[in-house]
Length: 189
Image 1: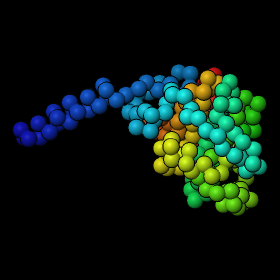
Image 2: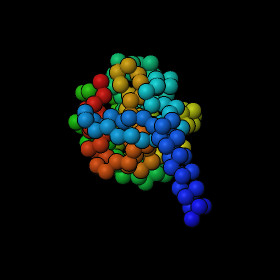
Image 3: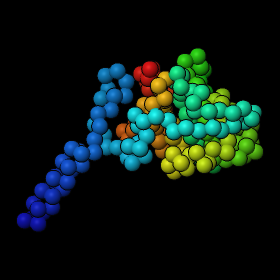
Image 4: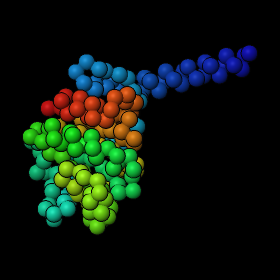
């Protein structure tokens, strides 16, 4: 019995320390605030400037992060071998249709342009698609797909979704991706 009480006490103290030192208050929409733990990836990027890049899209056009300052940006990180990435194309296309005049929509893939092209022939994605972005994604620390950065007009990363898109800055989502993303886009200046 003493051992059980000791274990419970240690766990309670450890839980308190984790919540005290590793938490944020997350504002999802206008009134939805929740406490969550930050992952190292989120800690590295959330509320920080988007790291600079110069990449080429599928048409050969150069895209530079510096050219995006002053615009709100949705960056989708995906891979041709990622089934959940491809499954979310429908929702991403809905977002693009609704917010095309308010946001720049970029989809970065580590895969080469021929693999990306083959995937896009059977699964339409209406974002500006950037293949061969593996080095940049590695620099960011993207180790699982899909991931999304929502960047404000000042170039700061305001929201991050990850994994199966059921996670926002570490918070488990219950809404559809589209509804969750819509809330995020509506809240970012």
